[in-house]
Length: 166
Image (cartoon, rainbow, N blue to C red; front, top):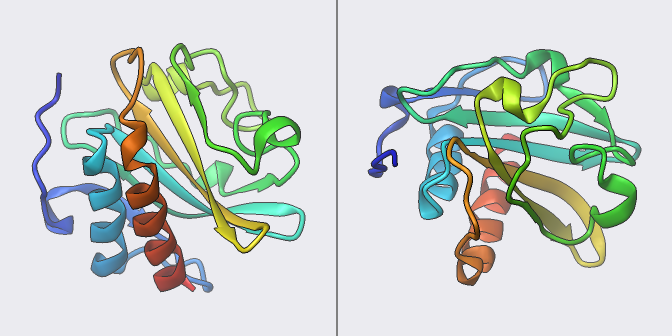
């Protein structure tokens, strides 16, 4: 199991995008890192849902893990996001123990296994009844469960990060 500490953005494989699609902003990446560290995740991606599209805003990969730049998957149909489950459960969190076969993008053959990840968690971000974003977390080793008691903290950290990305 990977040991996780509370690192700074300078120690991480990270990227964030602003409205002008520029990568950077250490404060946002540190917030996203804290969200991932809360549940000892090995990768995190933060999406903003705007109308019919889910836009990638930030991503993080734990040191020592395969760094795959998710830039090509930067925009996904909101009805498809996350991992083709959007029509079923976009408003609820979803944990998938054996997530390797799930697709990352509806237009490409990539799967979660291509990230060298085995389990995944989707946490929706709400503004009242509306879903305005989503946090996708990944673990390299298959997990039987995740600490559901941390759902509220994860959502708050992810919402703070999403708001900082605007």
